[in-house]
Length: 395
Image 1 (tube, rainbow, N blue to C red):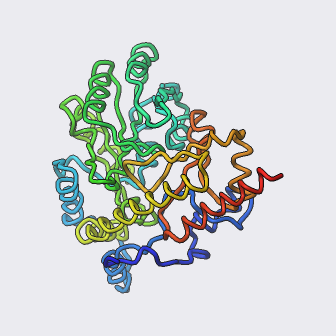
Image 2 (tube, rainbow, N blue to C red):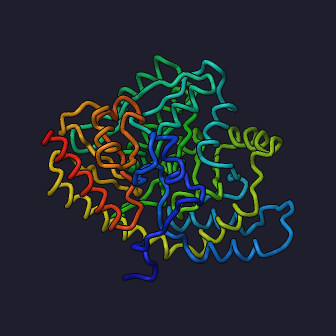
C-alpha cells in the first residue's frame, strides 16, 4: 500500500456529482453503477484540499487576480513532465477545454466553415462544431482489430478537397487511449501548414500517460506544429478537479495568439476564479506524488480488467489504453445490435458506461469503461456484466 488509499469507497450521492446524481437524466434510471463521465471516484490530493480550505476560511471572497506563481506552476509542470517550454505570454486561462474549443471555433472560423474531427472521438468535438453552425468533416481512425492508427492519406485528401479551416486533434486520443507518435504529429503539422488549417489540440489527458510512455505535445514536435496550433490542457482530469473549472490555452504563434488572447481578454473569458488558480497551483506544485501513485494504481486495475474479461467475458476485447483511466471495450464479438448492447449494460447489468456510438458511428459495438474507481467496484461491475450476459444467453 502506498501513501494514498485509492481503495477507499466514497459515496458521492448528493454532492451534485453528475456521475451519480444525473444518472436518471442520461440513462433513464438511477439504480446504476456510474462508470461513464470521465472523472474519478478517488479523493483528491490532500495538498489541494488544504490549499482550498485555507482560502475558503478567509472571510472575504472578492475579485481575485491570477498571481505569477499560478502561471509558473503551469509552465513549470509542462517543462518538468513533458519537456515543453512555454513562456508566460504564450499561455492564458480558459474556463474549460470544451469551452476553449468552442471559443477557438467561434474566433477562427465562420458559420459554414468545415472542421475536421477523427471519430471515434470525444463527442463534444462534433456537438460544439455543429452547434455553432460549422460543418464537421470525418477523418475516421483506422482499426485493425487490435490498434488504431490515423488515416493520414485520408486527412490530406480532406485538407486538399474540402478546404477545412480547422482540425480538432485529440492527443492523447479519447476514447481509444492512444498517444500519437512524434512522426504522426509531425505529418499532421506538415499537412496543416501546407493547406492552411489551424489545429486545436485537446491534450487534457496528457498527464495520464501509462507504462512509462511519454506524452508529445503537438506544438512541440516541429516548427510547423508550433505555427499552426492552439493547445488546450488542464489539471482537471489529472488531479480529479474538474469541478474547479481550470484549464489553460497555449498558442506559440503570435499571429494566432495576439488577436485570440486579446479577444479572450476583452470578453473576460480569460479571468479565473480564485478557486481555479489556488487548486491548479496546489496540484501542479504539490500533487505529483499523488498522481504517480494513482497512475500506478490505474495500471494495476487495467491488468485486473484484462484478466477478468479474458476469463468471464471472452467475447469482449479490451483495447489497452496508453493514457488515461478510460478503457475502450470492443463488444462486437457478442454479436448484438448496439441497442441490445446498451440494454445489456444498463437494464441487465445496471451499469452506466458511455456507449461507443456516442463517439461516432465508428464506435458502434464498443463501450467506454471508466476505471477511475476502487478496484472492488470495477471487479463488481465486470462480474455483474458477466452474470447479466449469462442470463441473456439463457433466455
